[in-house]
Image (tube, rainbow over all chains, first blue to last red; front, side):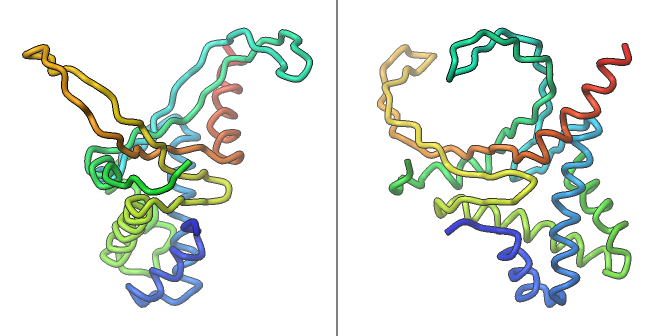
Length: 99
Length: 101
């Protein structure tokens, strides 16, 4: 089972006693503020969790995998996530049946 | 933008809640997300993206000081895949500023 926004709303409701509407708005706002910062070209650094870092990619040659036709991949800005030391350390030990 | 900026911005939108509560809530959200990943559970947020674990198999590394071989056990690392809305929004203003040059 994956963690979803609904689970996060439920957690805020149970742990912090926010009502469901408040909790839902807060969760939406949390993700929207991260999107807004990135959209406006600002990296997002959440200590203990990780950094969302913007990278600018130059145009590069690409290929349509179906037809094999060559088409350029245009210059673009992309977001990458660099997990922090603390998150990496917490996750490292997990060796369950993933992939 | 840092965690405290994020807390401030969320607080501006949710002015009916006490700033202390917002701070606690944001920290709890990040803690919940970290906990899920440490249990090997994915995170799926539509319009934002998904977090999952990628497994790095065991390998033989080297101690850079002594040059000795050391066996490094396999480990999981967090991976983020941006969702469609985030991908598009991050690129949008960039394309606009790019074409106006």
